[in-house]
Length: 163
Length: 151
Image (cartoon, rainbow over all chains, first blue to last red; front, side):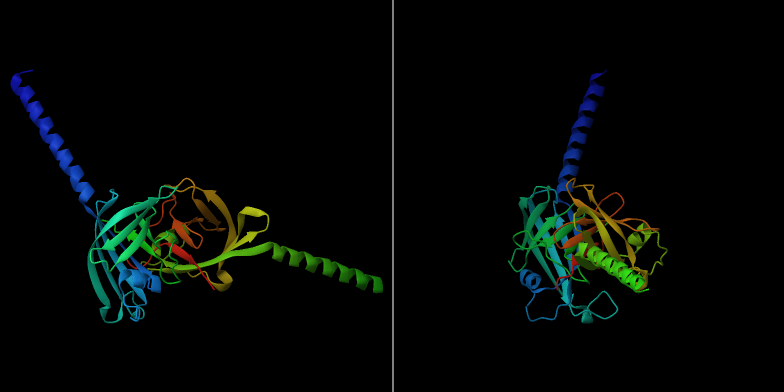
């Protein structure tokens, strides 16, 4: 093997190493989107900053989690709420939309390996607790980790958006 | 003639007593409801549907039998099966899902249709599983959870 071939081999390995390292970093910080429609009970109204007296039949959620495999990171929280528009899945006059930037961190892992996360907006308006069932499903819980109970129309579930 | 009448009366009494005991041995575990997306579960039930079917309203009643913690009866309404045509059958307890070996799973055995799997994710919430025992992933409007009806 000539010295030139050897040097080319090393350069190739060096570049491959950096491409791989970059790809791993990009994966760990990429945003994973979840969505779902939940009831609008008093407990969720309070923890999402929705005024208690406002008309709210249900909430449509959109959550972007950055670096899902980490125990903490940043999130984009947005939701839409209001009075249900009959015979549609939407709201009268489009409802009210709000967006927040926030952070999440791991609260605890239970015996089945499920992780409970605390999500809080930077302005402290929104404060949510989410239980990771698997990589595709989060369930809303209270601060103690008890699942929130939905109704005949809506459940406290966030579903991963398929790409 | 009189003896025949008394005998028939005793037989009827014993029969009714038996029926009443059978009913009292069955108890309701819970009533669950919720709305899920349509297509995937219709497929699991081998039920022909139209693309416009976007949701199913479910109503599930689970019954236990005293002395048996591994099986019981159910009545399921949804996807057009309502009232007289409600789906009825036996449920069995299975252990484990694709990601949780300790999970409790209700297998609803529906005669003449495909079986349905529901994971007990909490005291009051059940969640539909696919055939590989993964939690089913819903959409922006509907998820695959059923919630206990609290009176």
